Image 1 (tube, rainbow, N blue to C red):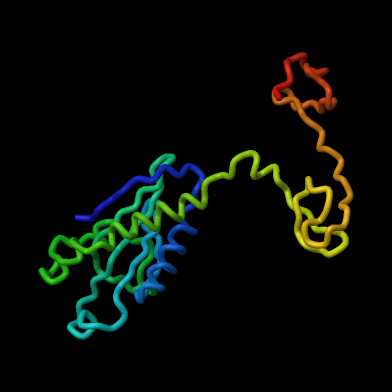
Image 2 (cartoon, helix red, strand yellow):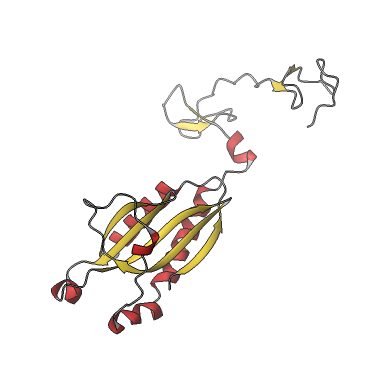
Length: 197
């Protein structure tokens, strides 16, 4: 039986997550492939490169299926058959979790790989969360003197010390009707609603 976890990630996309998992597993000496799964999910398959399994013709792989479940991403980790990428279209879920797994492979279930996969997914998704409003507001511009990137709100370049041209403040807009507001407005001149700070 596969192990599964849900990760709250309303804005995260499946493809970058699956590609990142495949790269991470490659770094751990696995051969990997990413395949589509029926219903819109993605399957990351990983198998040890070389080794006794390929010598005895066992084509088993670690399967990681990532799929959307509302505002969550569902991650399932289990064992299954290594699928020929050239032959397979969208993978059916019945192919992923074979009922009979040899006893030697059963030791995999006690391994730390599923927990490590879940930990890696959590770390990746943490980097995908929307940035706080303050971080988004801290725009970057190029210094006209040295060309290096600095904060748009800086008065002097932190790289060359030259004064930076001051940016005109961006006009505020009413959150209720979208009308442009004067910098000192306490109420919107278009809809009369109070201006939020």
